[in-house]
Every structure is written in structure tokens, then in C-alpha cells.
Image (cartoon, rainbow, N blue to C red; front, side, top):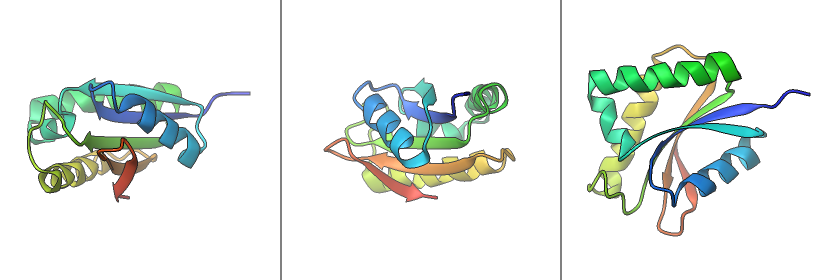
Length: 124
């Protein structure tokens, strides 16, 4: 029996790792989550060099682990991206659009992790 994988593109903030992994496992019936992290990661989707680095890592997850879902997130109280929730949600939507342009067959979603560390879907 093989494991089913998902990919999470997250801020490196440790407070959001468990909630995102649990949410992905519960909502997408996956066993394991490959995690790609950087401080305030959604802001990096405006930099072509950083986008290329992220794409390379996602490609490994999709091609080697057969990842079925790709999640990109931002969160409340992000020290690496000190902007409003609305601005971060705009960045999430931009990141989802960029990831979709890569042509992977995986489901791609964007989420916000709120003050209670609950996952809210903002882009599907």
C-alpha cells in the first residue's frame, strides 16, 4: 500500500505547520505532507528568482512523491510579511495563479491561517 502525498508551501513559522498538515490530511485524504518553507513565503511570488526556487522544490514533490494537492498559505502575525490580512490574501491568490501556470495536475489551493490557527480557504 503506497502513501498519498500533498505539498504545503508555508511560512517557516512553526505555529502553522501542525494545523496545515492536519487540515490537509483531513480534507484531502493524504498520508504525508512535503513541506516547503521560507519566512513570509507568499511575498516571494513577486520575485522571479525565488519563484524558480520554489517551483523546483514543488516539482520534486509532484514528480517524486506524486503529490496530489499543492497548498500555499499565509498567516496571522507573520513576522516575515508584516502586511494586512487582505494584502496577504492577495499574495496567496497571486501565488495560486503562478502555481497553476506551472501545469501540474495536482489540486492547487490557497489558505489563510487565522488568529486561532484555524485554516480558512481563500482560493480554490
